[in-house]
Image 1 (tube, rainbow, N blue to C red):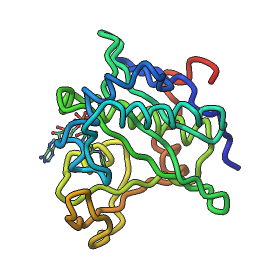
Image 2 (image 1 turned 90 degrees about the horizontal axis):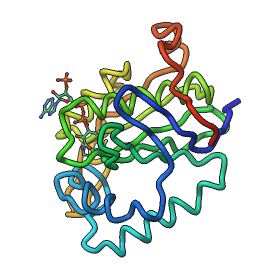
Image 3 (image 1 turned 180 degrees about the vertical axis):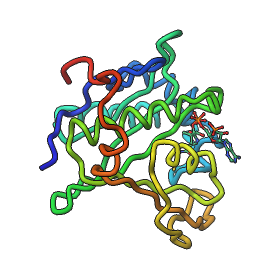
Length: 200
Ligand SMILES: CC(C)(COP(=O)(O)OP(=O)(O)OC[C@H]1O[C@@H](n2cnc3c(N)ncnc32)[C@H](O)[C@@H]1OP(=O)(O)O)[C@@H](O)C(=O)NCCC(=O)NCCS
């Protein structure tokens, strides 16, 4: 059975994964949600006003009471800046499978932060939450996302043509990737550090 902990604080070498707060809305807007370079790879359009972001962050914050809600802001330890978000969602009670998605602000791309955050969430999902399989899909024209999935052990299982239609009306083919808990634990026998630092 999946064990739900809500959204506990997770710590990696360079990052803290933590709950979003209402006061984060301006950073969320400035750092990634208002940026077409980020949203072009996602389904939802970039935000044009911070009030849209406030509404979205408020909706996220209101769901933290639910133990099955796992949605982290990604904070840089060194500067305290909020640089992105990552979540586990779509938990299926029958299969005990779940999905992951993430976004990082453009200024922080290609420094290994995406891999570090995804690795932490996959580790948490398998070792602590006992999820059976974690999947994700990336647009085939978004190789960076595919690359970080691959680096944490996820493997491509197929391409779904026109799986999504983005806010500009463009259909996108998506590569569906996944990793089983049994494979993850086989190749990552014991964690170097426990990433779960605090209570939810
Ligand atoms: C996907 C995303 C989270 C990656 O985060 P990141 O911090 O840049 O990732 P990392 O630095 O850990 O790794 C990026 C990898 O992609 C590779 N990469 C980057 N651009 C690439 C490209 N155009 N083609 C091939 N590989 C590319 C990098 O070289 C790196 O691999 P390496 O470590 O083997 O060299 C970030 O680009 C992002 O937020 N994009 C917009 C939102 C998004 O796409 N979300 C996911 C939707 S499925």
